[in-house]
Picture 1 (cartoon, rainbow, N blue to C red):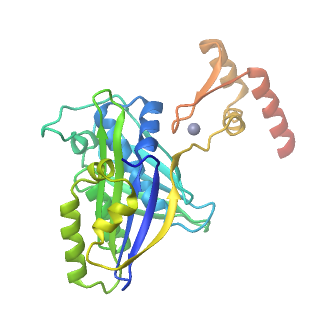
Picture 2: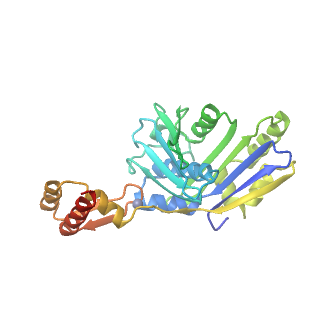
Picture 3: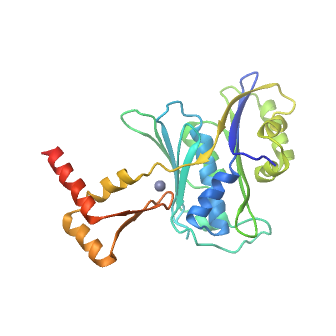
Length: 299
Ligand SMILES: [Zn+2]
């Protein structure tokens, strides 16, 4: 059992293959606690968030942001995960309580819940004028295959992606993790074959993180038979970037009449952040003050 959430990368010494492995049990458990997700929704949300954390770790800039949006027209609605390059991320699933019975014992019906009539979209904001956007049709809605298809079609990188979330009977997250293997240009088929066999022997990544004492051990199993170097080690955490000031500014964008109406109908002005479910309460008086300042600044 690995006791903290982090990710590592490794590259084989001939520079033909790179791997990234993440342990995300606590991060996914925080997402499921905040959003009060069903078992299947936890698995879907956890897989998307884990994939985003793995992909986000390839960004270089301090302020770079990567977002994955999965919408397969299934009953859980769109899933969105946003991460930075420093290992922090947040995620939402539109209908967190939806669930479907599993058809295969021991396997949650993630593909059915997510649906496959739609797209997986990756948006990378790397501080350029325009963000990079890649969008591919979903293969199965199981997420891992869909991410692999994104890498191949949108970035022309043949990849093997494995994402896993084990949900306990009390709905807590027993284990979560992910693995991405990528062939670098000119990679030899024989090396890829060795790694593929190693991954088959490893089994599901969620079980490998339960069994192993560290991700370094798992990297050793995936790279068995090859010499390799371990690269970055990045701690992972669930962290939202919402705050009172930002949400107050958004609310102050409403008209005076709209704000008065909310206060009269609901009795209070409350906003809930979609990404972390944190609630913020505002006084009408304070929002009107912010509006006044804003108007003066613009004047
Ligand atoms: Zn938030």
